[in-house]
Amino acid sequence: MEINKSEFTISSADISQCPKDNKHEYAFIGRSNVGKSSLINMLCNHKGLAKTSATPGKTLLINHFIINNEWYLVDLPGYGYAKRSKTVQQKLEHMISSYILQREQLVNLFVLIDIRHDPQKIDMEFITWLGQSGIPFSIIFTKADKIGNEQKARKAAAKYMETLKETWEELPPYFVTSSDKRIGREEVLDYIENINKEIEE
Image 1 (cartoon, rainbow, N blue to C red):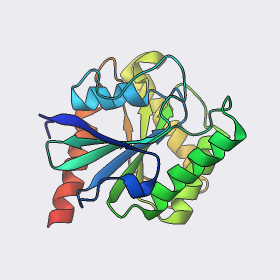
Image 2 (image 1 turned 135 degrees about the vertical axis):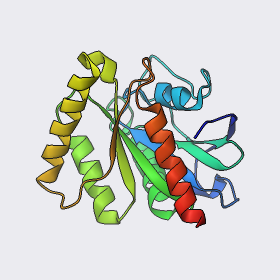
Image 3 (image 1 turned 45 degrees about the vertical axis):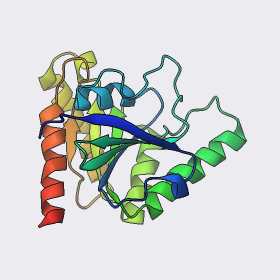
């Protein structure tokens, strides 16, 4: 798949404000500072589409971007950013969980994980919650270029998936990416395209 057109549509503080049409949605989520905005910009070939920031935890709303006038890419707030007040944190958690659990247009959730770190409790808990809730998701490992070469990155990803195997019967699909080196772009976009085709058939 090639993305020829990507445009910001709307920012919503609540699921009721999300677009009313029935286009498929692919949402992206991860811990703060996982490289989500950079990944979205790389996938869309659109440098300033998602706002990147030096301050983690900047996305506080559900951001919809229309892609090729056919489907939505959804940028969700990061989870687990400690410097927020309890109230803001709870509000965000409610917003994220209501979108994930109630949004019928959501076709797949991409969970972003920084490949440089060993499995973190917060990511593991979030992934477990998705499994228990029956949410279709895939894992995107980010920052593959920061770990050495691509081979090293793939090894690290495989090791991470082995850890998941301890509690999962069937592992979700996963991708290894680097926004700087544009690694994994085609794989992720082809995956989205294939799901779209399957749904239409």
